[in-house]
Image: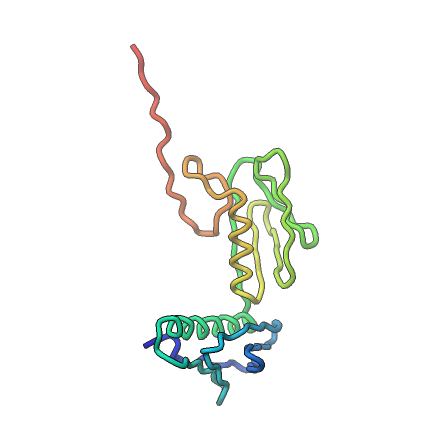
Length: 181
């Protein structure tokens, strides 16, 4: 039994959810999101709540039941509040700047790394070593943050690289100097 899947998703004021043609459409103050629903999962909207149910008790249906409920809850939260990921850039001379929808980063390579923000995602750099990614789609915001981080993930010896805000990087001890007689 899916405990998450059985919980109804409460709809705050100003959010409209419609189910049509095998897709869930969520519309709110920040925008619109749409997601297709697997054929064995049923979504119903009633009394300001969204309920998700499944056809049978096989393992794939149980997994999709909880997943779809969580996805719909994230869509509702996204159109009301939005999502935000923060990245820190650590390293001497490492910096980022935003020009329009392009994020340009100097990360110690022989070239600048240019990253174009997709539609629906806003990238800001309030400080040269701090990048903020915002949007209404939790999946897209997380994916873009992961792509930016993957350009230069934090290395374990000096801690240089791009990391999530608040991420702890466990540092390793470098080589010990050998003494010769």
